[in-house]
Amino acid sequence: MRRPIGARRLLELPAYAFAEVDARAAALRAQGIAVIDFGVGDPTTPTPGPIRRACRDGVERYADAGYPAYAGSPFFRRAAADWLERRFGVSLSAETEVTATIGSKEAVFHLPAALVDPGDVVLLPSPGYPPYAVGTRFAEATPVAYGLWPERGYLPDLESVPADVLARTRLLWVNYPNSPSGACATREDLERIAGFARRHDLLLASDEAYVDLWFGETPAPSMLEVARERVIAFFSLSKRSAMTGYRVGFAAGDPELVGALRRLKTNLDSGTPTFVQAAAAEALADEGHVEGMRDEYRRKRDVLCGALESLGLPPARPAGTIYVWQPLPAGLDDREAARRLLSPEIAVVATPGSLIARPLADGRNPGAGHLRFALVPTEADVREAAARLTRTSWLTA
Image (cartoon, rainbow, N blue to C red):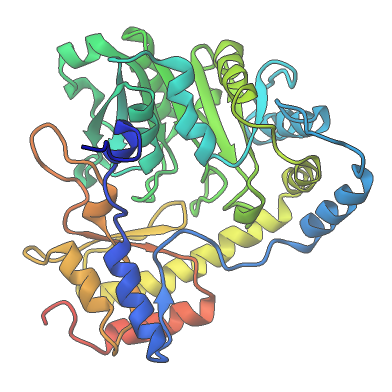
């Protein structure tokens, strides 16, 4: 009998969670129906002109650059370190405490392979970014989810993690501003998390891809403001600067952790193209376009959430990120709600919350009974979606 093609760890991955939603949306498009897609968090806003020009100029400036530097070009690492100091008041060495990444996704996925051993436990949030768990499994470690619940403001209750689990835990993932809940942690919240990690001798990984997308009066803080030792933070240009297609970001923090990730990546990839780093350096130097991004997402948030609230749904206006994490009425399954939104009369794509959350040890799924809306359609499309949502009876069908 022939063995199946594919490694065990690959074959054990769950099926693509959004296949049914994608198929129904494609069927509507084939009928000529205009589908408004709040599914994947890929901005439709064009990359700002100065960033595009810096990329074009970089192609000429680095025409003979060859392979990029594994850790990132010195000019990009310097730009990242300068941004960290301006934004958070944190002074880091561009040489040893910053490394370029090909966006955040690959670095988040690969970090466990650099830091944990087979059998170690990695604590990660649920709901949360799937690469936390998938990267853990590929490192042959054990992902254990902690729940993020509205009654705690979507902050982790780490003290409730069982002692026997903590004894085997090597790495703790946190993510604020949080995807998908939109919750923002305060500096005091981050201090509590960092203190927990220190007390239990954990390495701490902080995913800060949305740290510039906050809607209140106070900018979102970084974990690096409260802790540096045994901490690594991940930053992305994708959402703050509408650069998802450029695939560029960076990791920063403890030189030992940064060095471990850098050493692994040296054996995995050939770095971020130098001309893309030039575009990213321009993006980091300009805060004006980021303020514009915040304003745009705030407007779209208010339009969509206003429509959902008018239907009697609980207020769910996020404090940050590009997502609305909408609780549904008791008894309405989130997958069924997503299917109803894909009726020809509404034709709106939203993500069932249960698909982006891992069940906890007690069997509860923190994503159940929620829909996630990514605020990526144009403002005109968000207004049209709001109108469609409010003129139908999808909540009670």
